[in-house]
Length: 100
Image (cartoon, rainbow, N blue to C red; front, side, top):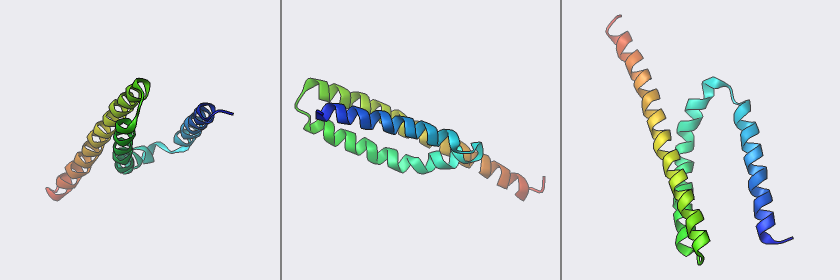
């Protein structure tokens, strides 16, 4: 079996497993887990940049560009959700401190 087919099979298996795992997580845990995954998304972004820089083919660089864009969107959106979640908790805490 060629290396490309093995990589595609691993990608498909990881996608299906990830989908199954995310669906099993209760709604209350989605936001805290997303904020924790921001660090891993940042590491993924650094890895994609490194691999794209070492790519010899145009197709590899284009695939790397798509990966960089997707990972950047993931990191920015994750920080946005985390900030929103923290503002909700701060608002509740300040509300309690004011005696209301």
